[in-house]
Image (cartoon, rainbow, N blue to C red):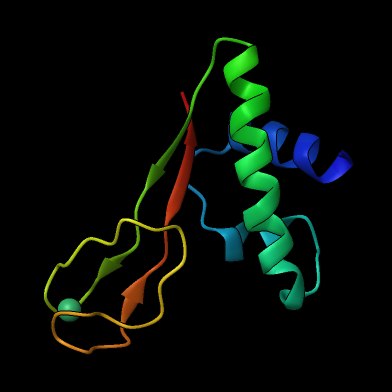
Length: 92
Ligand SMILES: [Zn+2]
């Protein structure tokens, strides 16, 4: 629960971060990036109850511009590139 609150507080003051950046700022081990993703999903629910919104700018292929419809992507299905811009999160 504490991680969720930390993430909400962080995004309220510094919008548009990736899970990797959140990990670094909160001084979490890089392996905990997946915990950040699941905490973000829970944070979205917490924010909705407060009448606010967590907005995600989805991952995007930096080569062809393909936009993913999921939170985490490693490889572009269109051009097979692995040069992916991570999803960014905003609090509305
Ligand atoms: Zn691509």
